[in-house]
Image (cartoon, rainbow, N blue to C red; front, side, top):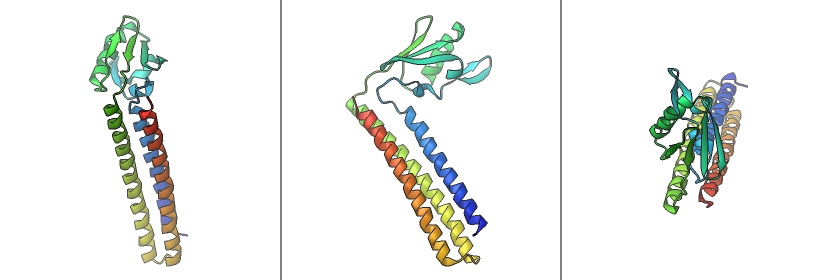
Length: 187
């Protein structure tokens, strides 16, 4: 059994898992018309001179399905949080009442929902491209090893295993996209 092929399989699987995890995190950011604190996950703000995630300077909650509530641990952070949300270009309008920053999530129009579904499918296609790139890397290693004396029939078997792995991850991508599409289109 070729060590190079085993390493290629291990690296390829690991990279495919990372691609799926990245897709999941990107899909969490896609708005569905329901309030979710995950929309704010990547917002960074200045906290004592250091870039800090919003979740580390405030409590984030969803009191109802249309509202996100942000309660900073220090009242001096209210304005900074508000500015960071505006700067994030998420299309959200924060309202500062002196205690909390509240964000009302507007209902999505049918056209906007279709755009969100299209974007989710685009993310899925990008993930499938990265899966295919990993497949090519793995197949290149197998072909190289066959040229260097690895048994050809075992090489063909390993190529088939690679395709099975890619197919399984591709199905995972499809399931994630279908679930997100259903979530977005549910009013």
